[in-house]
Length: 281
Image (tube, rainbow, N blue to C red; front, side, top):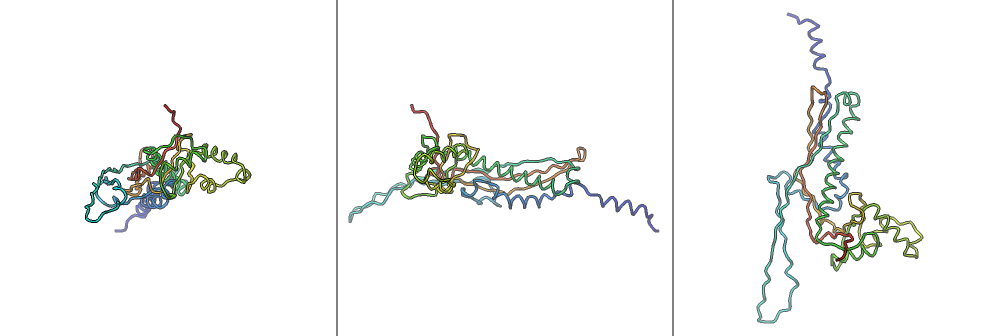
């Protein structure tokens, strides 16, 4: 028996309906965010990255730290050496979860598919990168080495570099507030000679104060700066960004949520110096 034509048309219309949730592909968004995230994290180029826990069970890494046994000593024939004790301490680095969700209406998605979905993807990526940079600064603030002085003159920064007590020039990065950087540059204009009469690039300022690079950031307070050795701060990854979506049939909205598992850690305690002016007792 032949089915009525109207019944067939109703079924085609039913299955041809486009739903807003169908236009959001979480897997594609997750891949895109993972690919673009490294460039969005401002401080990543100066960090050590650790992927030990990626794809592995557990959420904690135990880091051993060894004290230096000192330089070798002169020996006399027949006289036994006095062995030094190799002392070791350990620190635990534990992963955490961070994420952000955005809710958009079905109308916004259906009327501007690429614009709305693309903007949601962009915003989630930026929020994740933002959080990592915030945590990076929090880790810098754990510095155990310090220098008493404002980071607004070349002399203060050069003297702060000496706190590392390195015999060789290292790859130092200066993290500084934008306004303090302006004061630093202005202070260079007063030294006279050629420097006073030319515009200075950031690379030139870096060379004059003895660092490899300068990172201007509003995340630091005025009067607060950090000198960091390359790789002294680490970012430990557990899982790359994941994106999921879900629709609310009553509110007619789609929620897009992204999360990631990672942490930041002060990998080298001797690799960060805090510059700030403190009152002398």
